[in-house]
Length: 360
Ligand code: IPM
Ligand code: MG
Image (tube, rainbow, N blue to C red; front, side):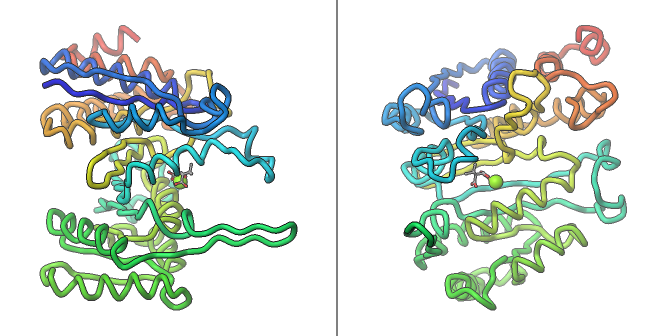
C-alpha cells in the first residue's frame, strides 16, 4: 500500500522523536511491503523563526493533501515568558486543528505491567486500568472570543449543540467497542456550556441503551482518576478539561512519554504524542520517542494496517520488558532516543532480542 504522510517535526525534542518514528515506519514498510512517502512542513516556533508565522499556508496545503499527518511537538520557552508576544508556536497547533476541523482528540491510556513500579500510584490501584479520553478539540474556551485591555482579559467558553453531538456520537460508538461505559466530565454545577454538554449526552444516551453513562464534575474526575482509575472506560469531555485530565492520566503509567493521541474530523487525521516539546532535552538524544511511535501505530491502524500497528505496539512492549528505554523510564541504565528507535526497528525487522541488545 502507498500512503503519503505529512511530517511536522515542530520544536524542542520534536525533530528527534519524529525521526525515530519515521525509522520505525520505514521498518514496517520494509517488512510488510508498503511505501510511505513523507513530506515535511513547518509549524510552531521553527515556522515563526523561518517564516514569521506559526502555521504557513504551505503547511496547511501539505497537510490537506496527505493521507495522514504526524506531528512531534510544539512550544518554545522563548515565547512563554513574554505575555505580550503576538505570535506563539502553540497558535500553529490550534490553527491546524481548526483549519482541518480535527474536532475529536482520542487519548488512550494503557499501562505496561513492567513499569508499574514507576507509577506514583500503589500497584493495587492500577489493576484493570484501561481508559480512553475523547477530548473535544476545536471549540470551547480555547477558541471562544478573546478580549484584552490593559488591565482585563477574557476567554469565552462557547459550545454549539452540534459540536457536542458530533464528538459525543463517536465517544458512544467507542464505548460500544469497549466496556460499554461512558463518563461525561464537565462542570455542570457552574457552567452553562457544561449544562449543554450534559443535556446533549443525556438525550443521546437514549439511543445507546447498552452504554452505561455516568457524569462527573471535573474536580471530582481529577480526584477519581488518581483514586480509582479503573472505574473509567471512555471519558468524554470538552477541550480544556480534556487537556488537563489527559496530563493527569498520563502519569498513571509512569511517564507521559508513553501516551499517544489521534485527532480527526471528517476528512483529515493528525497523530501526535500527548506530551509537549520538552525544551530542556532538546538535542540531547534523551527524549522518549515511544509516544510518537505509538501515535504512528494509531495511524497505521487507521490506514487499515492492523497487523502493522500491532507489530509496532508489540515491539514497544518488548523494548519496555527488556529495559531498552529512555531515562524517563529507566534512570540507571538509560538508552538514548536513537537506541530505542534502533531497537524497535530491529524487533520489527525480526532480529533476535539478543542481537538487538548486543547491537545497541
Ligand atoms: C496538548 C497541548 C496543547 C493543548 C498545547 C501545546 C496548545 O497541551 O495537545 O495537550 O493545550 O491542546
Ligand atoms: Mg496538553
